[in-house]
Image (tube, rainbow, N blue to C red):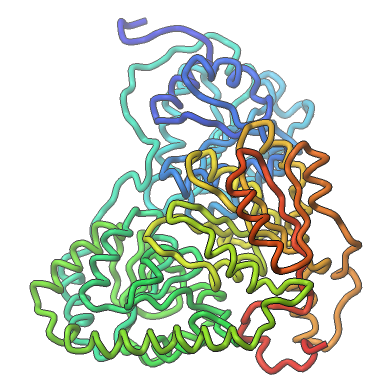
Length: 568
């Protein structure tokens, strides 16, 4: 042993390595027990979820809000299988999560040990990197490799299998000092000649548009995008990109995609996308929902695509390739535009701002067509009152399906920053509440509100107990329409009929909350929601507001336009 090595247990070596990378919380149940027993000595807090799928979602949201690589743990076998949905979301959304999965004793490998499973096959489709520690003296090596894999390039999940005995035996702590817990780990700038070409295109375009995706938040590029917008470029976002710029800015359109139908915030600005001659995509996957099934973005425009992953650049729209970190590359692009001259942008700015203002006013006029005092409540009324109550520091988390669309359309990002979260990587139901808890762990001083439907909330009721036990006061707004809304309305839209299972029996979610020791409020009239929300936001406890909403109400999904079957 050298003077720079220390022999101790594998669990303590691992806890020390995690501390070195800035880890202060691990999302996990009891296993690996040895790690959690050692963790408090290294200033690491355990956030004990009830189910692994929720724990993985908590870790995902924690990473998005904190800018740190998140850590989640699970036991081998069935517990490990429940990590798969959460890691799949993180992979598609490019979120760095290190999953530490306890494996069977090294001596028991391939002997049908209890809950033994081929975890490499299990995780191969939902992670960037999978390894198994076989030598306790290499724990530091593998922890560093896992964090490097998760945080470098296009971020994503890394899975580290740890045989149970590796944590119990003596191990050598190596003298390492690398800190790899923040992302992006190695920001790079796109090729200078391509940045110059992009600057020329944007400076001289007749009708340019910027469409920002979640990569803006992942790279911490909000300030750089705001500075680029100030050169006279109008900016729209995807759902994951919401908050990249303030939506109150005169050059901000809002969220664009597949929900620009009747009542949509950006409905009347659609032609600013479809008629653009130069389109700058930033951290944008050009996926189906964000492009309205690839029908929204113009076919004859010139595209500039900036992304950390060269495989995404030009995937669906042939583009000038800017492969690099959004923060550094946007800064370089702004400097190149300023050096080139901005007379075209300056002369066009007043007209562009007027066009956006007209679109906003037309949207407000559209809302007059909805009965916002109706009972059961219209979700538009719920969102209006929630929007009025939110502070600039508040974080709003939406579940998948309709909840994400209500949030994207009717809540306002008044200040740039990552404060609106939605599981849009794969958009699986049940992510809302665990996302909210992960966000609250990352930013405990910020109010956190979860918007979810009754269908999604049913996946994760148990985590109310987690929220209470771990002292994570969040507000959960359940839009309770007693149906699987998107499923029923999509079936009616496509087939003129619906399957039977889209209907639920009545559930009192406020009573469920109270049964878990949380605060529960049931809202049946529009005038009661605002006071219930104010009370919840001022409380230091976990609150569920169960809002009875109109099952016929659906977001402004473009493909639902003109479907008579929805007027039932």
